[in-house]
Amino acid sequence: MPGGYLAGDQPASEPTAWGSLALSAAGQLEASRVACDWLVACQARNGSVGVNRSEATPAWPTSLAILAWTQWQNASGTANYQRSIDSAIKWTLKTKGRTTDRKPEIGHDTTLVGWSWAADTHSWLEPTALFVRALNAAGHANHERTEEATRMLVDRLLPTGGANYGNTRVLDQYLLPHVQPSGLVMWALARLPTDDSRIAASLDYLDSAIQQPLGAASLAFAILGLKAHGRQSAHYEQKLETAFAGLSSDASPYKLALLAMATQEGSHS
Amino acid sequence: MSNDHSTKRFSEPFIDRRSALAAGGLAAAGLIVAPYARAALTNPSPVFLASGQRYNGPLVQTIRDGLLAAGVRSESLRGKRVLLKPNLVEPSRAIPHMTTHPAVIVAAAEVFRGWGASVVVGEAPGHVRDTETALIESGVGEALADGGLKFADLNYEEVGWRRNRGRVSPLKGIYFPRSVLEADLVVSMPKMKTHHWVGLTCGMKNMFGVMPGIKYGWPKNVLHHNGIPETVADISATLPRVITIVDGIECMEGDGPILGTMKPMGLIAVGADVAAVDATIARVMGLDPTKVQYLAIARRRLGEIQEEQIEQRGEAWQTLRSPFQILDRPHLQRLRAADGELVT
Picture 1 (cartoon, each protein chain N blue to C red):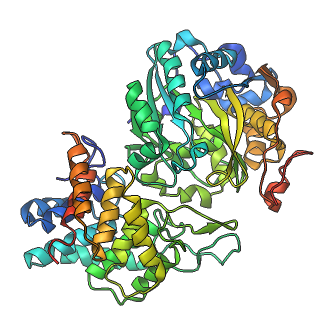
Picture 2: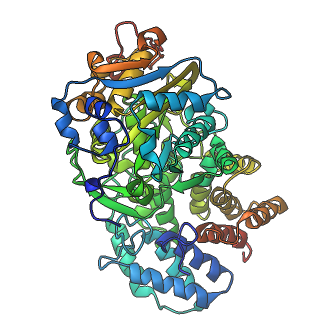
Picture 3: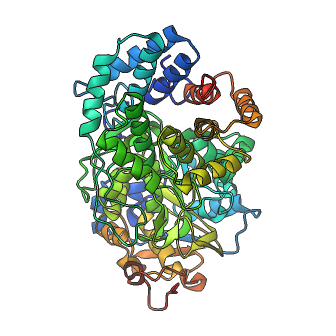
């Protein structure tokens, strides 16, 4: 710790945050703290956390840093990172994805505000899901930004279940679901009250999708999403074990962390 | 990383001088004169077309012939780094005609390796963050493993900033991944497809896929907000050493670039002038390249799109023309050549 997307690569905020989350979930608080400290060192004065130490923008990993710090504090019973958390949340709540008027050729509600990948661009599904999860974890579930972003996530689900990067229908054609964003958005929506039929459909989609060969990240996000909604199966653990076994000795820290997270999800509930 | 890759020069050009001068191949070689100076040049740009191609056919020979016909100097590639950039925008087992076929990638790699170059395949899928799954879905991962080829995940690599040499969009600079900046030659390997926003996607639009998601997102929305045609042109202007090999064997028509239907064409196209290749492909598809916005921009700055300025090698596009269906949308209908097809 910290780690990068690829083995031997420069450390990056997202893999490091996922690593911290997996370690603290496994009770490895000292190792998790090292990762949390690294994220603090990446934090800009405005509270944001860039994609790595040399690239302060874009700053969507701020969401994951909030999650990592919050989980570490909850696990340790301390408030070591509260200043960093407060600063990051202040930046988060000021930061908005760009909206546009509704257009007939675009299926989703382009007026709903979430978070974007890069500054001054449209809100997309994965960064919004990460910020929703982070704000919930940090005690801001009822903030108007969290609530609107949650509506945005549901709005971006495909009618038959699942989601892609965040488009539903373009030029009268519904687009294809992808496993990773579908799993991530299910993980983000897990603790939120919604009875939208697309949730169950999305979980069914994920259950089906993991029967096919997948990369480690997609598999991990799918199982994170499924477990977060209470779906448990020995088959999930078998899939994860196989994925772990498939990682080489110089495995990506990012994939390793995600698989560990998926393994841990639900084990303490 | 080095400060300004655009100033890098090589002892030998990768393409012959006539082709370089003629075809905007200066842009491909990054040599001799700046890309903008080529507007004053009058020699036609060579574009190679071959029909009757199959994924299980002699693609190595066809691609080798195409590169030589396009003016590539094989002897100058010894020891050079070649990056093959296929289109893996959103791979799906159910839609193999969306993405560049593995057989074309492996064949191109074999040609460049045979000429003594080191070859890496790289892509920054635009719609999916999990590149490993993209490689599985497309079949490219397995093919690369079988061929002993390395893959560079351009979405997550270290990046370097370069001044926007096109200055068509408001972007002052463009971030490129390390593998792109370090390559001596980048080979755009698009799938021949319609595109429901800009008409067609071929060699130039395919280069959206070298832009790192870690800076631009998934989708690469920074580019969209700064104008798709404008940023397509800017990327080509800023990356000077690009040639194109088109997988036009099983193509996509209708609602491309993701959900269109398969159209068998059996084509391979090769050229060192990215604009000339795209313009030729547009003509084969029944589109008027002068009406395609990014090609119209390219005409002024990057290469040739006028028919009389493109020298057809291999087969003539007129004999291969087979209009692609396009959506019944005003912004697409206006791109059709006189007898282009229409989906209603």
